[in-house]
Length: 320
Image (cartoon, rainbow, N blue to C red; front, side, top):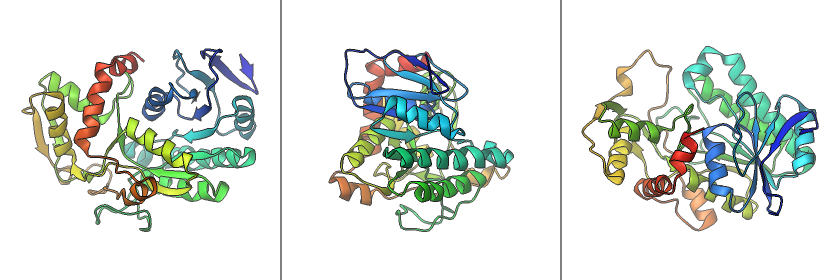
């Protein structure tokens, strides 16, 4: 079906009348995990750019985010309750090699989506990152001025400003998430689980700290913020600060796998990598106070990740 200049594949059950969400970056890790978490309660529209998927239960549309006409037509056609802007260039090395492309995708397209949502009065959730600081402080709050170290962080920081200018009511989410990935895009937790199951050595940094959150928990938290008409910047992360190495050990523990293949490494031993913060941990105090609940520890989230696998989500997404 062609609608407003973009192609649409509609796999929804027409007998269901659910509120609708439109998610950009529809073939990405977050969009697909968002769909999985929300599909029982929402009609999810996945907006694709280059890679398109045919997913039972979802509506797929090919959408050029650099076309305001197409953006406005999509909002008019689908009338979403809110939009999640999850599209972006997330490779640190990739952004450094192609700064102009990184700026276009991370900044210009984000501003376009924000302007379209403002024009149609549609609430916007803009997905940002924990990569915005120099890494000299732990558990950084939303009030701390950003100080990005690389092109990826700089473009995401600028995107936050442009989104706020174009759509002051937007909800900006700083996060670092994991979930079940696809054949073409593996999550950090996927990489660890696969290595441990295959008894293949894997090196994880012991000098990089962060506050990861399960994608399902991220979705649940953002929906809670939307229900309370929240706007502005929120850190939506796990409550626990830990190293990548410790995260791997917890994966092994929760999944009942031998942790012996996990080797201790250090980012400081790899000087040729693009410069990155060694501490990306964010404070969840603001969102916890706003919602009246704590996001929970990593072990709890990993247990939910294992339950998702038992219920077939890992296999379902892994086939894509």
